Length: 203
Image (tube, one colour):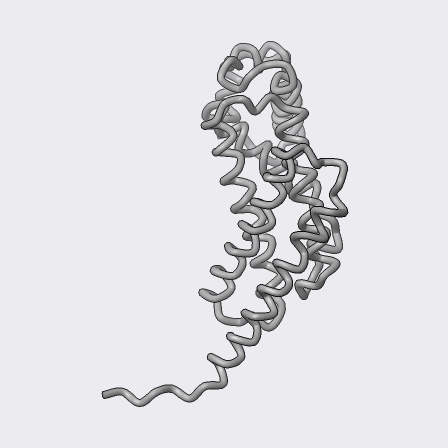
């Protein structure tokens, strides 16, 4: 087991990630072999396997790392889901999708689905973290609302890529923001009603 905090280990993992990302710009994921990654990273196959189980594990780590690096500090520290935070989440998701689908060759549908699910999950967790700091105190309600909010943002951003409107992020925000914020407003009113309502007698 390698020591994850060892500077040499960190450097090697960085070389592997950079090599893999460079290869994704010129080759389809399915066509990339471990030997290709190892050769480009100037390591041997055994060294690769000492750090990653396979290229799927490497893809998952890169997907998460790149997403987290793109999160604005204001969003990370947000304690309330405001209009400004909503706008930043829409932009973050859109920019991330554009980077992965245009810069990298995500031609494999199975791999694209893997990346999509990973990003949606991270977006949901990020939104859930913001909600949990605010007035959404019920854990199950928070998870459901976070999932719906994340899916709405991700779905719209992904669709925006497919229709080729990537230079009109202002229009994307104008369309998605009221949908998300109005939905959260309705949920907040409903949540307050549920919390304030007396419990119905049993039997």
